[in-house]
Amino acid sequence: MTTVLILAALFSLLLVGVPVAYVLGGLGLGLLLAGGFSPLMVPQALMGGLDSFILLSVPLFLLMSNVLLKGGVGRDLFAAVQAWVGHWPGGLAVATVLSCGLFAAISGSSVATAATIATVAIPEMESRGYPRKFVLGLLAAGGTLGILIPPSIPLIIFGFITEESVIKLFLAGIGPGLLLVGLFIVFSMVYAGCSSQYQKSEKATWGVRVAASKRALPSVALAALIIWGIYWGIFTPTEAAAIGFAFALIITTLVLRTLDWRGFKAAVIDSMVTSVTILLIIAGAKIFGKAITLYRIPQDISLFITGSFDQAWMFILAVSLLLIVMGFFLEALSMMLIMVPVLAPSLTALGVDPIWFGIFFVILIEIALITPPVGLNLYVIQAVGKARIGEVAAGVWPFLLLMLFTVLLCYVFPEIVLYIPFRL
Image (cartoon, rainbow, N blue to C red):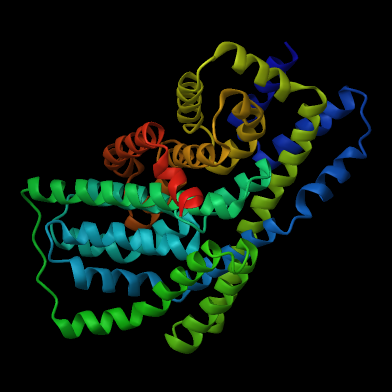
């Protein structure tokens, strides 16, 4: 009964609009006081939760992402990819998906990926006759690659919560990320082929291709450096974030010369605001997690799950449905911080690999980014494209189905997730 009352209070406060950090921290403190536990556990939980080397990578990756965003790297990536594949059937849509994947590999942020690529892709695609709803939906969905393809901030948080290897989680995200990119590309080409309004782009000359590729090469090299360095164990994710930030500054200020002092200042402020928001939510989640652990709620829920679902597929199906429903009301990070500590104890008993579960979880919270009414990517694309939220929401449903299909494939063929981190 206590568990039900606590969960009811949690979701009630969230649904009425109380900020997530305050809900988690306040409810956690209230539970500690009601249970007669010392309130000194709150500062102890805060210090223990935020004093982490791996969490240092979050603001550093955000700094790198925002420096590249303000430096116009997204435009260069899109122009280079468009020069090579723009003449294919559905070429601009293919270029958009590939650009989202490439920018995701150097940013780790869904919102930054969606905003950056949408700025240049929306006018280009609409001028070539692509239906507006399709354009908006493609960009909203393409932005979600930013939290799957490494480096990924949600995967860092997942590794921090579960104490799993962030490097293995990063590597595990590569296979599903490429699969999702491939599915988006195939769908885009088929859609363009069936559209009566679509106009094929002209094939770019070799001179245009070489010039565009030279301008985008430093950014692509940065993405390769980060993934290669993490894969071979040359540096940790936190060191990779610091190296990435340093090289992002060099690329945008010395090589491309597109970042001025005003842009750098804006990048730092944006990164600070986002970092503080994330860390406040983590701090609140740590207090709440401490409280519910003392009340033995995760243990009780784990016993209930293992008693109710004696097979892994039943557990996975139940979690999938739960996260899809929660995605209508909560944003991705909140879902992770609330649900992972509760679900993680059940994984071993059901024989579910925690690295696989991390990728499965992230794909499902990606869906929350493009489901109304709180899907962040919907509002980003609405603002960039000056559209109605209904237009964006109407365009994302085919991509939602493709993402759910990816979840199914990863369940049926777990090697899609586990091959790179454990076999290569």
